[in-house]
Length: 535
Image (cartoon, rainbow, N blue to C red; front, side):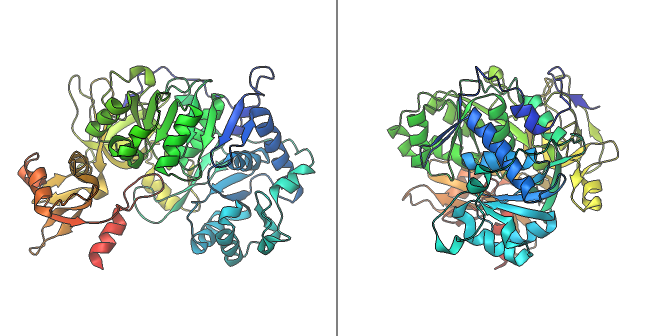
């Protein structure tokens, strides 16, 4: 009843992530290639400089007592220094717990304690929160290392990574078991609940790159824009690690700004962009796009949240590029499904494509738990997507119960996402189990209504949740961001939807807001919208 990837199995080497990315750098072909170009400063870093700084960082960390098997926190925006710090920690035999750039001191303190971090590397841009969080967590001051000198009197006497690596000893050789040694510890809420430490081994991360390496489409001469945050698993794997493995050039941006993003694509002749749906909406609808030469772009690959098919097609038509979609989650390292560039014309934009090689999938009926078979023709019934493979996490840190609830006895990880599969094995995500709205016994998918709302010319963005009416019935409510100065009314929104959906799917309440709350990876923060309802 399970279904596998249509692609042949790949070889997964039994090596550390550092060795997988850097051990086979070709002295003639690779070392003088540009690995990073930083948009704000224009600074460029070659693969030779990157590797040497990574090794020196490992030496510096070892010299201050960071031992293999320990955890080091990394708190920084995208940039070449992030790559140096991340891989330097791994080369030292330690694991990295990555922190969101906008984390508060309280957030930082909680993660430092929960992850058992013994040190933290922090960019000066976020130093104030980093230092406050470290102090609250009881992390010694000499274990908070700034990535570079700032000249700020408040940071006087603080250890600085650039200073430490200038005189760092050669790091010791580290022997580790890639299958069990922790490499990364991002925090995720999983299908529901509080954030939990996702234990990803070296083998998890190496396997996931191997699973996508030859098919997503990034080539040696590609220039890849890196605006998706490296602290998020999507940016960590498909940008920081996968693009480096392909020996391409990463153009790094510390945050998303549409004008800067468009300017960077034009200036650096970017060919491949990994994006999230909010960026797709901007590229499809914003008039500023017409002011920039984006002719170098070949592929837009969207992930982190569902991309509506109509939006994807509009984007492809506007920019003349291939628009692909993938799927994953932190617990899957993260990529479990993708559409290869070579199949861009064969797979619809709304599909997340095919299971990665070396993996198995199954769909389970949310009501009965019974397996839903892959059809011989057409499209299957909807079911919860479950995945098994070498990219499935080791488990949650210090939380065996949550791990057991997520991964069943057969090794399948239950994603909490509702999907369909067609006869080819092509998967489409239709919603999340916990987010389905039950109206008079019918299940209504918020993602379907959101996709429809985004087709309205006067709507810039939208989100849908279930709310209870005066009779206690759960009904769909739309939070809508008007486009420009359009005087769109709630009734017009409801009429637009009603004309295009079955009666039970109609939007019955509309509220206009300035911005839809989203995570750094582009996921709608429905919890914030629900909290708004309660206020």
